[in-house]
Length: 257
Length: 257
DNA sequence: CGATACATTGAGCTGCCTCAATTGTCGTGG
DNA sequence: CCACGACAATTGAGGCAGCTCAATGTATCG
Image 1 (cartoon, each protein chain N blue to C red):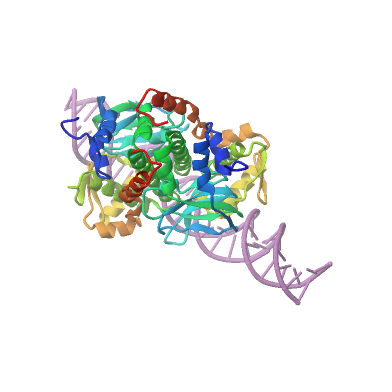
Image 2: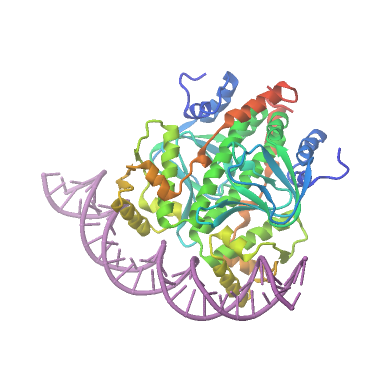
């Protein structure tokens, strides 16, 4: 056992109670901590995908580089996130991943996942939910890119990050730290850095959003959600009910544990 | 047993051999066929997500409706696809799903999935891969939306559909049926229908792509991929290797089957 | 103190949008 | 068989959101 819950275990406990075996299975994913400097790469597009990662500390992001030198950022990762779940099946990583801050990551081989599948159907359920959540985030970002203007894009993304942050660290208020440069934001949102700057100016002048250095301040969260057309359902997680069913199933035969 | 493989079983066999138990688990998902007319809804955004669907025949799509009346299409589904995998964890569907053609769908309760998790770690692995593939498709579309112009967007999407089609039905040549109106394409790509039309005209005049009614003709596939900046890695599936590992694991203890 | 990265602001351009009118295609019913 | 209506596609005209290029300002750090 561990003397103290790892980041991942803490994250999972948010979803369901874990017995000893399960906690150990998860802890196995965080056996090999590795400190990372800002901007350091975890892996690059097209490289063999034999390991995935738990992000234990710090922020990271995944992206695809374009031929013309630009890039599209696909995902922002926070502590407790598993990085590369979607690269589970292809032989090679589909995206590059790099750090946004200093931090700690723990690589683990793909086997650990299949091992979990074979051992705990409850953890499998949670993992599946997590993968689904990541997909939901990407779906929402697709909507963002396709059908919203710059103002809404920026606002919506800030709302999303704010909500995700307040889930992992509950003391997040209307002010919080967001270590993303305007260039990074532009690469997330499919805008130019210049236009992101103008958009921030606009929002600031209307008193809706203040940003200096990497601090964000949203004076009126409700009004801001309005601007963004933000709805939080896509980030709501309710694995509990699923697990109840799963447990019922296993008691009534056919199940594993 | 079934006298004839269901659509889904056929799809899964593409990934790995199935024993009798596994085939039955999968077949259970297609127990309740239901014929659907064109444009009929499978479910709507925000409605309770207690069942998912296998698409047995026909095409379908998922989308999000915006306040201003527009919509963003998130995914196009082909026969053999499981619809709603990403709605697995939230209590409510995050997207609406409707048919693009006539067809047949089979609803099944969420339990069936958790049941699979608890019974076959091999099927679980395949399911996880499928979910990953859907996410890869969405990631690619995100890149499309963020960093490509209309011409590339249209071309890239056509390439993607062409490839996906030729995987499920091998007799797809450089001509194929694509039952998507220009309005639908616009809603996929975040463009206006008018501009999609102009883009098709442009591509036609350059001899790169012909489209009339719902038939597509790509005279020179290689040249067309060039225009699109299309790379097919993100649609490559290699679950086989994963399963080998999974099997090895289970033989050496800790595993299930 | 200079170097480097990040942010702001202006000017001019363009890709895509909106609105609107026209044509083509199909299915339906008289 | 033709007339009709519904829908999909095309084409033109004009507008604007967001782009690029470039210059300047500002903070951080060795």
